[in-house]
Image 1 (cartoon, each protein chain N blue to C red):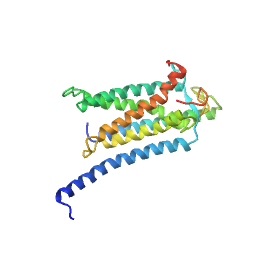
Image 2: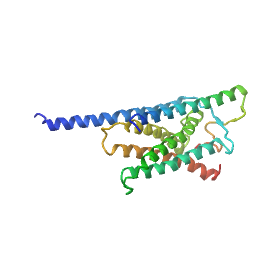
Image 3: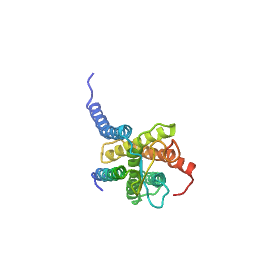
Image 4: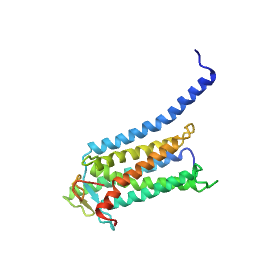
Length: 190
Length: 56
């Protein structure tokens, strides 16, 4: 049985789609694993940088993560608008707002992850802490995969919403496993 | 916005990551040399952050 030209074309197309998805996913996974391995094998410094106006480094990290989580909600709303789910019509403001809130959200998490990885490390002292450590690695891996997938024109329509959704889920889960815990145990305050 | 924009975003965030690592390393190094609290930093056990055993 020989393949028809149509079947050969479809096969080539699906191979191109798989390749286009594979590179971002492999690099994203590598980033997540590298972060986790470094955090695990690196000897944590156990140091904290005090920031005026905040009672502790944990408080700073909590509020930065909260800002990032709020920006993630804006991300979901603007992404829904960009994909025509909110009935906004030709709203040109959604794309730039989506891009900049995404950049700011990830930028806000960077001091947090650096302190987590460098000063604390990958820990498993409780289910919450283990989950938080895994989610931190997952979030940055998913973000890198999303960024690398963005410029690729030959992705299936579901790829970017799924990758973006995974990034958002990762960030919200990070907030739930850290900032919510902090507010619950220490109260809301700086 | 071009196809390079996501790569530039990733690069900028990677630079920010490295800057923060340098700050953390300098703070830890300063504390080590100073024999404890280095002025604007404090020290705690990495598995007992503030509240004994858990961390955010």
